[in-house]
Image 1: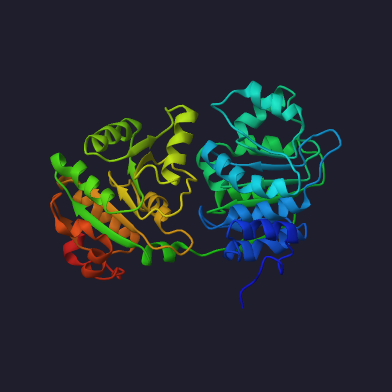
Image 2: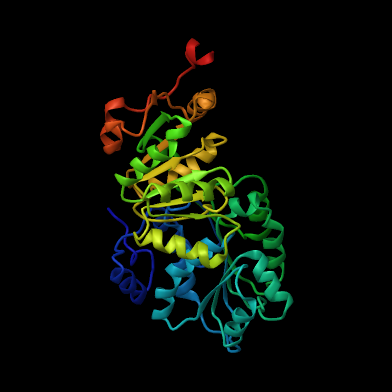
Length: 400
């Protein structure tokens, strides 16, 4: 029997607001975490980006948020990147409006004075990157002393980016007996330390999705020639709804954007050297379907969530299998099917074979050109090449 939002204790006005957005039943992490969070328990959720965890913490947080008499924030959401802060704000704002609550997203790369002006008028929910929030606290613009509930989102990314010391600094400045919800793709190392230090008798919930990502997604590994690689990518993009491409470097992302545009592809690139307004416009245009493709570096794509991505292209083979899964997972969200295409040059074949072994995959390596008819129908090609064969042990040929 399917669990409903009402059974999880979500108030009727928020359920109605969800229904207006076409959201009628909870995802797995929401079914697991919302009930405990509504009861005021500290919650530790292990779930990946795109699993629906934003609503898992947003619904209980909004349901319990009350205005402070001096307009100080009572709910705090910490997130590692500007893109994630905006995405969370996009989920929170329609629900907060129902309860006449005032949310704000604050992050670096934008005018801090304007943020301070907005905050001075009174804020109930603040969604922030750690660095910008500390700047605002140091300037006296934000007082977190009266925060009643805290969310630490993408804690593993916080650890990777070196933000956890800032997160802990912020948590130490909250003086109230508050609720803490932490969500992360992994719960080991530095993340585990934060959990032990700052969560009180937390309830642990985990959604297992790695197997779904690998086994239910289509995988293609294609050997391309350097002078024809862009044309192959353009051919794939033109047959897909939305295509997300990954490059190793910012310079490579810019170059690929220029070359794809010369092939007539509507595309933009996002990386850390671009202005925040440029990044937001590119992401918005891609989400709305104004662009067929988006080129991203791994860092810029952290936490990126866009619906209906049909194909992920590893324009440069990923450095390791974890990066492959992080990249490819953006086309296998919430049960949706998709295809991950790894493009490689002749001198990268050994790296790709090693990548397959780490992923537990054994699939053919196809040499192709941009005039290959199979590029017009990737799902059919995936089916024709056979299912993913999980390794038991490497064959003698593969050992070589």
